[in-house]
Image 1: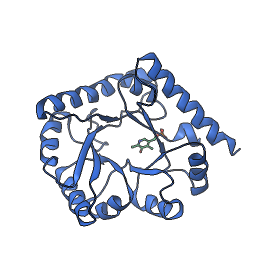
Image 2: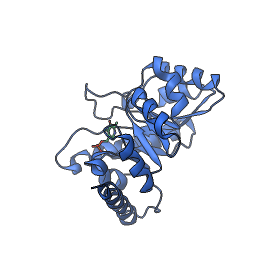
Image 3: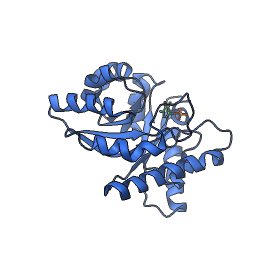
Amino acid sequence: MPRMIADNIKSVTQRIAKCCEKTGRPAGSVQLVCVTKEASVSQMLEAARAGIKIFGENRVQDAARKHAAIGNRAEWHLIGHLQTNKARDAVGIFSLIHSVDSVRLADAIDKEAGRIGKRQDILVQVNISGEKSKFGIPPESAAGVLKEIVACPNISIRGLMTIAPEADDPEEVRPYFAGLRQILEKVNVELGTNYSMLSMGMSNDFEVAVEEGATLVRIGRAIFR
Ligand SMILES: *Cc1c(COP(=O)(O)O)cnc(C)c1O
């Protein structure tokens, strides 16, 4: 039973490597974020022993509890929605916040990062499918929002994140991943920046996401199911 997590990680890692090879990307150009929102502390330790370097959590409170037990054996990324009143705790734990979806939230993060002398890495979440149920800024606002966040002295923008719609066939969501990559390219041209991170792809669709340029994939069920 305990070997299952290690075996799953190995299999996911191999599938990522294969996609990189297929599309001519360097091996190691994709980071695996192990999504642990449904994992116990002991499962997380198992994952770390199997080589996981990044835990992805959805909620600051869950992460704080687990972080107290595990510490910085791996990096911690926040992948779920963040409320401004949790910015202080988030800045204390996470090396990368994937889910910044407003200038107001960026300002709160900036303030808290400044307070502890940290420069906080972030991604801006884009709601590329336009689904009402999803957080994220509309694609057409990306350049404008990033331009405002650039003014935050204690934040480093690293790129963009999106969550694709649910689909039976991952090919259906390929255009959303390609779309996020195009938005990043457009923003870089418009702002004269060099942002490079694309957080996209989950258990059901990460191979398509890697083919479309993902640099971070967020995978839970394929590891812990
Ligand atoms: C839960 C979650 C994931 C992982 O999804 P799986 O289908 O378990 O791989 C990735 N990203 C976000 C934002 C999530 O909430």
